[in-house]
Image (tube, rainbow, N blue to C red; front, side, top):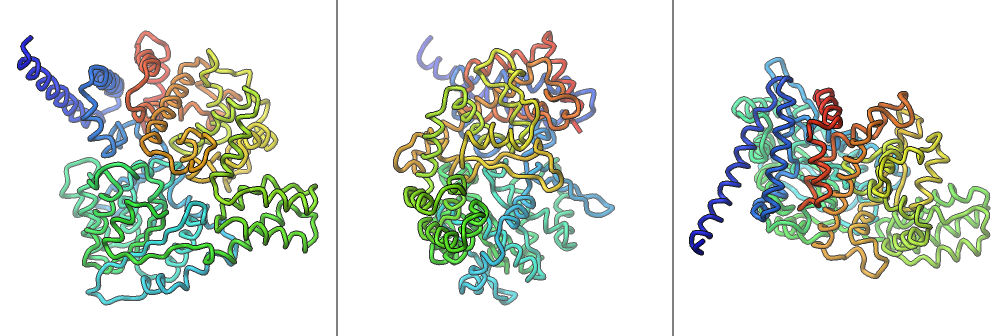
Amino acid sequence: MEPVGLAVGVVGLLGLFSTCLEAVERVDAYREFGRDSHHLATRFEAERLRFQQWGRAVGIAQSIGRVKRHQERTAFPPGSALSRSTVSLEEAEVCLGPRGKRTVWNAGRHSSRELYEDSLQKRLDGTCEWVLGRPEFRAWLAPGSSTGEARLLWIHGSAGFGKTVLCARVIEYLLAALETPVSYFFVSSNSASREDPFLAIRSWITQIISHNQVAFQSAYETFQGQEELTATRATIAKLFRDIVQVVPCCTFVLDGLDECSWIGQGDGGSGSVAGFLDTVLQAVAGTTTRILVVSRDEYEIRSVLGSAGATELRICPEDVGSDLSLYARSIVDKRLPRKDEVTKGDLAQKMARRCDGQFLWLRLQEGALLDWKNKKQLERIIDSTAPGLDRLYERDWERILKRNDEDKSRAVSLLRWTAFALRPLTVMEITEALLADGRYDDLAVDEMPDEINDDYIYGGIISLCGALLEVRSISTTPSAALKTIHIAHFSVKQFLLSNGLPQEGLLLANEGLRYTQEELQNAELAKACLRYVEFQGTQKSLLGDSNADTSFHDYASGSWYQHASWCGDMDPYLVKMITALFNEKNTIWERWTRWYNTNDE
């Protein structure tokens, strides 16, 4: 073939590939008409996946994928069955009708409200009050003229300084002190909010229109004038602008923007943290809106908020000194109840001085404080732990590496599921998920515990991973199986993404390596989900029918594609597993489509 002809052929193929994918997306919008079409719709999704994989294989999909990668991380539209089964989504779809307002959340089990309430419960009485009296906060909160400008406040501090708990206290204060609307959003590494900060704007709008008739009317008029089933980012941004124009003195709070996966990505366009902040600031320009951002001091956040003239409030160890003393004493009282008051007071003060302002450092010391040890031994433990979170993570990671092969493999799997699952898994779910480990040819049902109780949680989960993980109870039930597993802090995930190698400067690892590792971890979870789905006995809980509602089956069936879509170039074994699932001659296909239709509500 002539070189010119080859070049033209490649360009034409690129255009054809892109056009076909666009056609697929257009046809996909019409899949929701009638339950009888679900079988065909699922086959259609399979063909799309195979077509995209072909594009990757021949190398023509790379540039297209990179452009769209951080624009729409969810492969299916929000109304599709697979999207709805990904229960970590916090995006709110607003359904407005002539009878009044209805707010329907396509939301996960761990919404911003739950994060807010959980953070409030963690706060000790008397702590976090210092911020309410700071001049920067009082000036930001003070009433302004009706023609004033939007006011921006940026509270920032290092990892482990208790920013989320502090933010929850500020929100609680604002809700009680202000008569004007207050909306908040928490970006969390344990939810899909970290994949798209624009979910914050959707959530803010949802909260306002749920309580303000003027805002609701504005949203209703926008809804009436749109054809799309789900509002685009451009539509949401315009609606946000319209609302703050007609509803004066709105207050919007955003916590954890530094945990967004967009940090370090993009060039300031719409698919970047800087682009998101620019959208928010442009929307509120010339209004009496208040914006509060609580995060670490990241360059992308500083570059935008600094240029916009935001007031900065930096959290220093001196600011939280009294709070640290109270928190350290609460830990000592809990862990060393039989020690005398003088000993407990001395140990608490030593811990507070040693932690360098980090509440998380104090919390991670809990496991090392054993009541049978004498004062001198306990002081030696505190003195031997260097300030800073990386050293604490290295300590627990080194302990994991020294375990026998079976315990080490289990600990690594626990950390992978906890750090990279789409939402926090329950103890029951993660117990079953571990059975789909690639070490086994089939699900290791023989490894299931006789009973899931607190002894199992400590011996089979917490003791293996040390302070890297934590277990949280659900207030509505005492069941051990329904407790949820979380990483101790977002920085633990950064540690794991940096290979978990114990070396200096671990938390400052190369960002490119970090994202490569995240893709690899999602590939492992996608394969584990498919491996679980393939097992003939996973229609119900492996602990019996009475536990079916808490089984890992729903997560595995509904989330494998989400993990696969975040893998970049899928590895051959994962492609083979997906192909096998969509083989209509395979009984797995029949069972999965039956689950798909049953859960498409």
